[in-house]
Image 1 (cartoon, rainbow, N blue to C red):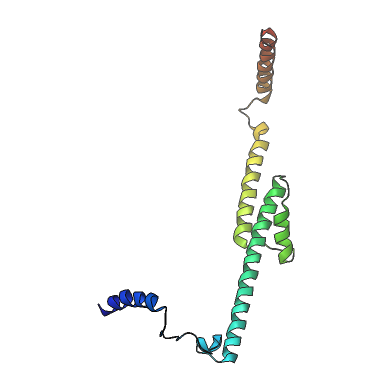
Image 2 (cartoon, rainbow, N blue to C red; image 1 turned 60 degrees about the vertical axis):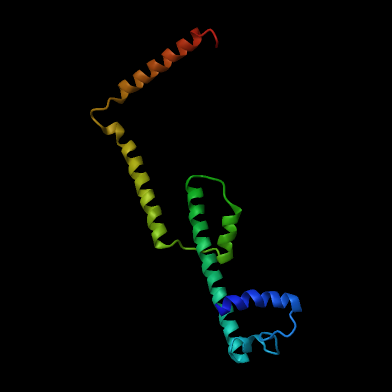
Length: 157
């Protein structure tokens, strides 16, 4: 209860008196090291450690960005899409030689295997005994011929 009364009355008193007579606990001749309860040498060592940790985090982040860019570049090459300068720049920042993590490499390998299986199934179509490719070809040509005749007879065309 006293805290509530003090906070309500105290803030009004400060505005009324203009802040005269208040304690200045935080303002003094304390340095940043003394404010945190460390000696100057301990504080400098702490700051160096923080800077090193920050650099390690940034390097790790750059490595991960480069790995992702490598993966995107792989898929762009695979599907013959245009290259991206941003991805190339991220790979160059790390040093150019970026190896994919084994999980990503495994995913790419599985995709490649699936595509090869699909291609191999299409490659086996002519060897199927129940499928007569000659009759399918004749039927397709007859259908195409019928479409041409109907297009010739069309009044709008």
